[in-house]
Image (cartoon, rainbow, N blue to C red):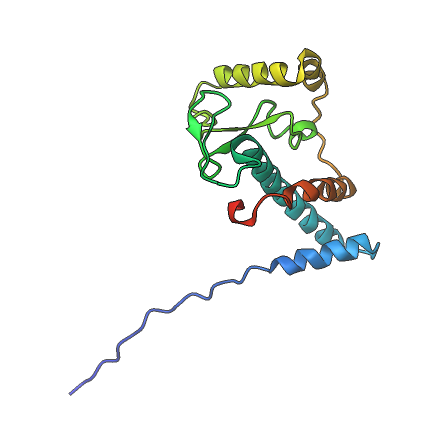
Length: 181
């Protein structure tokens, strides 16, 4: 009598992600002016860009939805369509697109909106016009003119990213921990 073995499917080895401590060590070595390899600088730069985007998103959504409120379920209105949104359901919308590095993390350029208004399928002209009117109403026409003329596409250097990270970190730490994604 022949017996057959039960063949178990092979389990693929899951590649472990490097812990955040890796980037903390890179930041320490950068701040200590230790010599870094080119690939370490690129990894640190990539990490800082992603981290800064996330921090700006959380700051803007908390500013526009529930800043200073003790309840994170408090409702505020969308910047474009005036729907009621919460911190957890809102997204960040940029008047000047994100690929323009000069205004990517400018808090005058970013507002919390509902996901429908920030959807590319939505009429972008109307959405951008409404955001422009909001910027004019809050900051004035001179700010809109200045923001239109100072669009640069150059990526910031690593030193500029670290400096910006240190500035934004102070405000980001004031957001309650249970709100952060």
